[in-house]
Length: 189
Image (tube, rainbow, N blue to C red; front, side):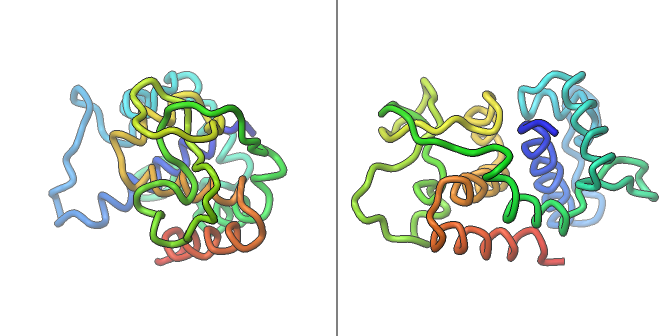
C-alpha cells in the first residue's frame, strides 16, 4: 500500500458522489474524450501517472479497500473498509509531522470547509506547501506531492483529504471530530 492509494480512492469517491448528485444522464464530464473514471482521466485530475493510478487500483482491489463494480466493470471504493482504515490505521501507516512555516494550501481544520467545526487555540494552521498558496502555516507533507493542485479542481476531494490530515495530525478530540465528519460523508449511503 502506498499513500497515493488513499488519494486515488478518495477521488473515486468524489467522482461517484458527483455522478450520484447529477440528474440521470447529466454526468458527462470527460477528459479528452475519456470517461471520468478512466486511468487517463484520473492521471489528469490527480497528477499521478497512469502507471501509478493503475497499480494503485490493483493494490486497493487486492487489499479490500476497493471492489469491482459488476455493472460498470470498474473499481469502486469499499467505503466501509476505507473509512475504517483511515480512522483507525492511516496515522500509523502514513504519519504526519508538522514542519517549518511556509506558504501553502490550508489543510486539516484550517481548510475552508472545516474552519467552523473547531475553534483554534491560536496555534499556527497546517498547510500543504504550494507556490500558489495564499496562507502561511506549518507545512505538512500531503499523502502525495500533487495533492495541492488536485484539490484546486475538486472541492469534495479537498474536504476528504483535509479530514484525513485532521485525523493524521489531530489530538484525540480533533481526530474524533474529523472521524465523525468522515463517517457522515463516506457512510451516508
